[in-house]
Structures are given as C-alpha cells and as structure tokens.
Length: 415
Image 1 (cartoon, rainbow, N blue to C red):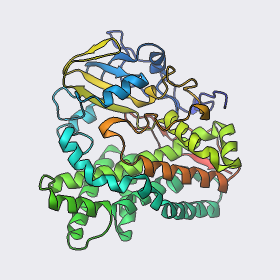
Image 2: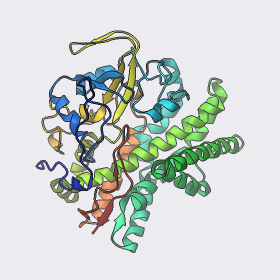
Image 3: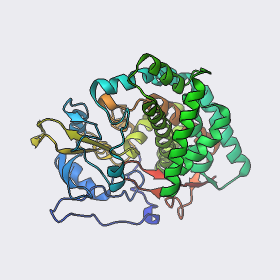
Image 4: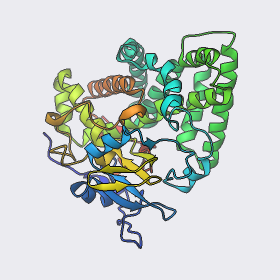
C-alpha cells in the first residue's frame, strides 16, 4: 500500500478557502484542488452524517449524500427521480438551469420510458462485447504510442493519447464512417476544451452531422449503435428523430469524455503512487485491482442530481417530496465507514462495487468498455515508457475542476 501523498505537486492549482453560505451550510459545488481528491470543504462531511445540507448557487438548500450505503439506496429508490424537467429538480449552476427545459433521453427519464430507451443499447455494452473490441482498442493504442515515441518527449497525454483513443473507440462503437472520424474528433475537442461559444457551435454541428449520418444509414445499414437505434425506432414509434439524435450525442460524448479524463487523471494519480506503478510493471495480475481503486479514488463523474417524488426516511433523516438530492459519487467513494483507506490506492480494499459508474437503473451502460480501455491504456503506456514521469512545475496546470465532470486539458509527460 502506498503512503498518502495528497497531491504533493498541487501548488500549481490555486487553493480555495471553503465557501459557507449565510445559513451556515457549505455552498455547493466547490472545486477540487487535487485532481483525485474531493473538494476540501466536503471531506469533513464524510466523517459525520451520511447526508448533509448544502446550498446551491440560487440559494436553494438540498440534501448532499456523502455516505456510500445511503448513496446506493437513494440512487436505486423508486421514489427518486432523474427527470430534469421536473419543476423541483435541482440545478448545480445557471448553465444547467438554462438547458433544463430540453428533454434529455437516457439520463433524464425514469421508469418504463428509461427502460425502453436503454433496452436496445444493452447488448452493445456487455462484457463480451467489450472483449470483442479489445484487439481494435489495442491497435489504436499502439498506433498512438508509436507516434508519441517517434516525436520524443515531452508529450501532452491529453491531445496525443487519451482524447484520440477514447474518441476513436466511441466512433467505432457508434458506427461512424472512417472518413467522418476526424470531424467528430475535432468537434469533441472543441466541445470540451473550447470557449463557451465554440462549445455551443461544436454541439450544434455534432447534432447536425449525426442527423445527416442517421439519414444516410436509413439506406446503407451498418452494425454500429446508430444502426441499432434506427432499427429500434422502426419498431418503436415512440423514438422520434430528435430523441435519436440526442441519444447519439449522449453516447458519443459520454463515451469519449469520461474515458479520456479517466486515462489522463488516472495517469497523474498513478504517478503519485509509485508503488502501484511498480506493481503494474512487475505483473499484469495486479492491474484489475489497481484499476478499480483508480476508478473509486478519481471518480471523474462526480455529481448525480435527483429529486424526491415522495417522502423518504433514510439514515435518521426525513427527505420530503420535492426535496433536491445531490449524490456526490466521489465523497461516497471516499466514505471512511466503507473504505479503511479512502484517500489512497489500496488494492486490499479494491472492489468493482464502488460508485464511479453509479448504481441503480441509471448505472453507466459503458462500464465494461471503459474498464477494457483503461486496462489497455495504462498497461500499454507504462510498459512502453518505463521511465514515464511528470514535470512538477506543469503537471496540474491543465486541471480544470468541474461541477459534474473533472477534466484535464493538458498533461505534459516525460520519459
């Protein structure tokens, strides 16, 4: 087990004082100051009650769930809704609130409608389906690492490796033609790293291009997820074109962004835990346990918003109908009541039952594929470059804390 490091190189990230509202409760959300640790202001909450009260940007007070068991119960509770158009659904920020009126398939629907939208996608995301893509993912990985090695150090792990790997795999899964993949990769890059105006334009262009691609696939069938969605729409009249396009955007962006940032922040985290790196290089048998601990520790997808549709009693607290609920997956995954060593990688506590992929009916569809990509990416990267290391002066310069998703826009590495 590695000794705790708590981001020894984090001075490159500006430390922030904990913000407390006039009501005496912490404001939410607050930024992480370390890429792989929850926001400083919330860490004490994990040692207290599994539910706390926090104040959102608009002054509304909601429940913040920090306990692992409480998070599991509430995310699986039939009276807890993911419907973003519900009038009492909480918003983490003004940008989210401005878009809340737009229907969000898969992520923002409940019950039978959610099951209906999710059902045709399940076969593409099984463990067997992920295993079938392993050779293709390895080929992409090797090609990217070849280019990095040829150019020589330093290299930006985001632009040269993590981002193109995840986008190429996502395009392959959806059935995006090879000639269109450069377009999608460029728009995904702008969507997540560009200015607000660039991001809006990129999203609009992605939707238009996916709409045109779906039209072309109506006469030229393939085997990707876009083809699966079209076939499902033919047999299920409830899925209109707008819903199909938005589902395609969600699948493309979710598959790309979460995996790319997990590769990047995961590499940063591993290089802060040299004992783990040595274990991985010594033998692949420890890789699965280290991957599960990385997923738990980093938890790049941090916040799940919900609303109570009935009164709920849990852990001695009374959640009332209409109350907003914020589940912090990272805090629940750092719950000291559940994990003896919550803030470090400890393979003795490794388990796939962490909350990095959520739980309940909305648990991440792509978890098997994500694990496959991470296994290949980390093993190949650390094997190819046995002396891989960070530049302490710039290691965290590209870290961009976020309300929902943690990301790095750049990660310079040397070898």
